[in-house]
Length: 227
Image 1 (tube, one colour):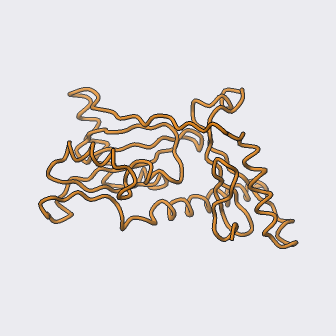
Image 2: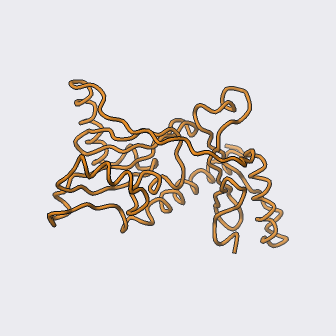
């Protein structure tokens, strides 16, 4: 394996570990609706999850342990737990939606895409979903409306803006190190069809100071880089 391939493989591994830790950092604030005060282990579970196909196509969803599919949203991201309402208070509309379907209580759990295939609870829920769909057809699916950004930067402009801010904080030795940007486009993006990018891809940059993400305005988000 060449040096460039080793560098890319190492970057992907570091990003996986960082992303998993970031998405699970609020696990003590996952949504719980428990009107009767039952033991948490007895409450139905609604899994929020992110899945990835060949490092390019990503989607997030909500699935109950009984196999009810409540959400399928194309395009993942580091904020998936809040985007799906897994973090308490992040999506009151989702909480209201799920309370109507679980009036006796429920709890939520997020499964990062790096754990998607190995998570036993989610695997069981997916099996139940397959059985339910085979006998009853597709269940109710909620799809998140697209987010509108009237001042959308191109992804290359976002990377340039972030790198300018990152380089301003690095030492002269660090600025000679290689920074690798990982760009994850939405599956329907024109870029993946050989055209222009028409989505807001998730961007992560591996720098000498650690992995940082880039918001839609081109600002790096890792505190150790921006502070």
